[in-house]
Image 1 (tube, one colour):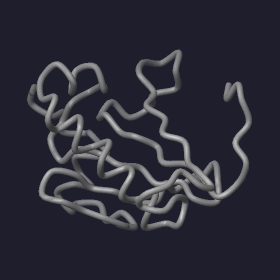
Image 2: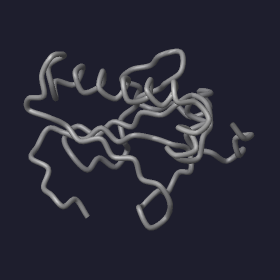
Image 3: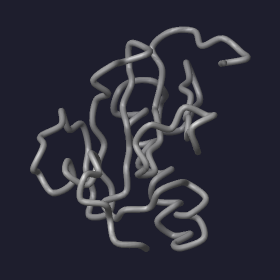
Image 4: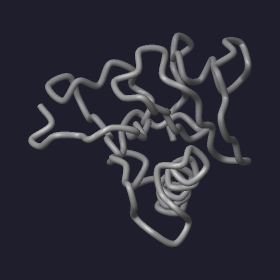
Length: 123
């Protein structure tokens, strides 16, 4: 893990300098509502440690990568997007990597989207 940039928005949320609308947290993850939601449910799930992209996180800490996905699923269950044992009605996880994919905050985060039909292709 590299030293987080001092201007990292999500690092500032993790430390409490900026207070997000938290929906779930663990020792290693934080989930909060997106300020510009793209679906009725739009929650961001971030690791508390700074990693710029999902690939960087997977290379540095595969266990934390799995925890991040598990936290996203727990948010989906909590928000009523699925049952703990099922996949109905459903949700989408999005991880943008790099500017062409739309990554604007360079701290890995998963978007948990749901609450309406989500078309395909997404972009």
